[in-house]
Length: 268
Image (tube, rainbow, N blue to C red; front, side):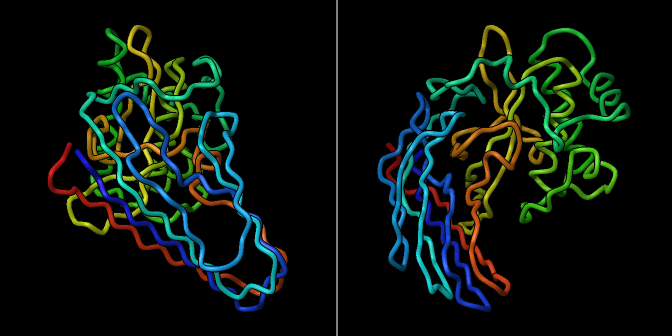
């Protein structure tokens, strides 16, 4: 499948800023089932961009802008070829061993109730089947999870609040997998939702011995297919967020995001 992506992020500031520094995880990497055909990041003002690879193997672009700046617009556009892999992640850039992802963060640490629910739901038997049961249970309980801007909730807080979004569900999934004693991680990326306009998306991956990393999207109850584009992985959303940064200046900022993900004709 050939997916065309057009992602615009606009910041407007109530007062001119002296300086901006941003970390952009907006460039996908190649795997056996994901090939970047064309990709570019454009900024509508004078900036310095520096590309690198972070500790998780993600492609990262550092953005440096000197003020005064009252607005800035980032445009990411490109095409990615994807193939169906039944959720398996093959040929990704892995710098860390799977046991590293048994670590939890403040956002992925289960409490006793969440851990018990995950173990009861997963049951016994084959690990892959356990993970699919846990993934399906989350989707069944929260079938209307939306893609909202990150609210910073932990897995426990999101579960107790009763209205988790896709990022929250990924954190809850990871917390449950942690309770099963398995490595798991967060994934940020894009999803073709069939409507053209699609918000940025997030899901999870878990390690299965003999298979490797396998993706799970509890907001849809499936493993990611050819409609998904992986961007970055980390222990939680904080480490895989598409854009994070700091600014020097007074006032408040206003953020708007527009994203188009469309399947093109003539898929290769």
